[in-house]
Image (cartoon, helix red, strand yellow):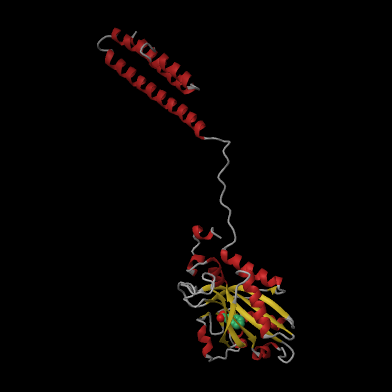
Length: 338
Ligand code: PHE
């Protein structure tokens, strides 16, 4: 008789667990709860019958009943949580919402400025060529008319790899390489990376230059001025004035530093141009006859000019930036503005 009651309790427990697990909706689960755990449910009825057992049998049977009821309560709770989870997932998962796309990258401001500079010269008839960043002393200095002990080598804080190999300090070695390979006329621009041991707000150990070289019959200093004026108006604004100042480079004679009228104050004088009204953008000059000697050109037949500009510098002037290091910090808040 007593074992019969305990058996019924065990059966009720098993059926309760099964019912809670099978419940496919909150309504079904609630019906099962009322059936097994309600005040008039199966557990309640069976537990009332515990009173009919003898004093000796009651404690053990009561313990079994309590344990099974507890398991049923826990199973009900777990089932309720599962159903609720599924329900709330349906609420936040809106499959009709458009997805979040990864943001699209774009050209770096330096690459873009380089391309812009090259485009302007391409329209003027120049070809675009590139050359090695690891250079020999010969192309970087010697053939550009820097003798071994010439003090002008100190103008460029060179990063040497060996006594004969170095990281090019400018794109000018490509003047020599280009003339070695081609007969005049030569019209080239050379964009690329250059290196110097120098680092501060306006200098970076790696930076970019665009070199330009024309060698042809009858090229004069007036052509140099005309081409660079055309460049300045295309790159900055149509009425941008340029100014040439005498300068020195071993591979050009005469040489000139080229300034543009300050992009900020237009020439009145401000903080950017340090009150001068002018901003330096490039070095230039007529190719020195000594350089023609290294490449087998006859200076009596041809003449030419060369120029070299810093791409970072052009970009800083164009966009009004004051710290060269921003170009290399990969900060998207900076880069996405261009
Ligand atoms: N190579 C020079 C520099 O880096 C610039 C330059 C190029 C000057 C061509 C004259 C002619 O400073």
